[in-house]
Image 1 (cartoon, helix red, strand yellow):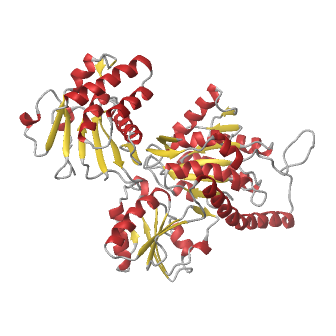
Image 2: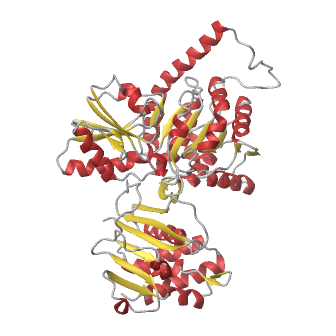
Image 3: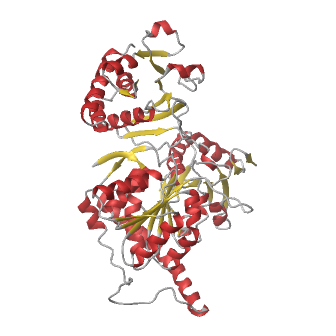
Length: 183
Length: 371
């Protein structure tokens, strides 16, 4: 079963890293087909960016961009004022938002999940230049919405990506987000 | 071991595992991370090679030519305008019969400035005497680079090889790649031992004036070598299949046996087209796919189908589709689409649509003008 995911964020927030961590964790969890790629364009820090991931238990031959995602992940809800993040989202698709609010408060026309990734990042001291980096907790929350990507596999992928203490902090943030995501 | 990484990092890994001894390269988007990774390998000592920093791609190719003539295995990588700047020295490498292996990450040519995928950069180098290969996956990038050394360095070939793949679509996309053990690669690709080399102990002369009679003969020999390369490409691909479980050849066919129509395309579109063929087969359409892995030498003998639909990401202005025109007159019913120019996203649905259009007798620039 193919799952297609789009990550929306701002340049510098690590949306591309999030997609890569998901793909790596999916591979470690035994999925044969995984892909992660950025939106092909010129990136600028702070500008809205997109990244894509595909997961399947079979080899993936698709090379085109994702037009009808199963899940959209929004790292920064501020961009929802300028971008329609639900564009192409499948009718039964899910939207995962970084917000302290409950899904029921948002009354979006899609299945909605929320996680307060910013607070989790601050509590776990995942900061770059004083700014909380939410990509790892967002992926931690995301895998609750997916079958077949294990928490341990994601933590392992995170530890490989971020060495030493940074790895431990991020791996913990992943676990907290995984547990705290509101469905 | 299965690793997950971008085609650019996989390229650098393949060059390392092929034990390239001299690397001369200049960074250019979307190839930059190939050069960065190789520089890291050399700096950390993981790769025992000389990394020659150059001021341009023209010099990068020149350095590779000089090193290769000394009997040393070389590697370089470029894209788009970088490849165009190399043009003069590409001819030199080909005509000097030096089996250099190079990666070209296909990218559009400016102006209008565009960093996205487009095959016109490498297509414009098709007459330089290089073997041209196009890859549809990161795995194929890895496998093709290692195989390219074996093919290019074969005494029956002795021609440089260009491995092409789509900018961003593969270059920046992480996918799983099975990487064999170094010892298995060493077994498959032994040390480079050329029949001749520049050697102070055994002085020979190079690049002298050559009178017409000899010049014509030398060029004729290149054409013969290109033809011989067809056999070597198939043999090396078969050997790779036996050792590592993935068969390659001049082309890769998919569901062609009973096909009424065959879609012929290259690089990443050849992977996407597999999905289109499956979708069309589900609808009862008898359609197959040929992935044209090798563009030089052109494997006409493997393209004997009655109805071919060519989909290509390049154009020869004033002529039209390049592969399409190369096949014209050799295929009873031929349709040609130019698609994906400058990074236009081509999905399997677009490929299905092109198939439907061809069945109505239409072709052309998709989706700009089809008639």
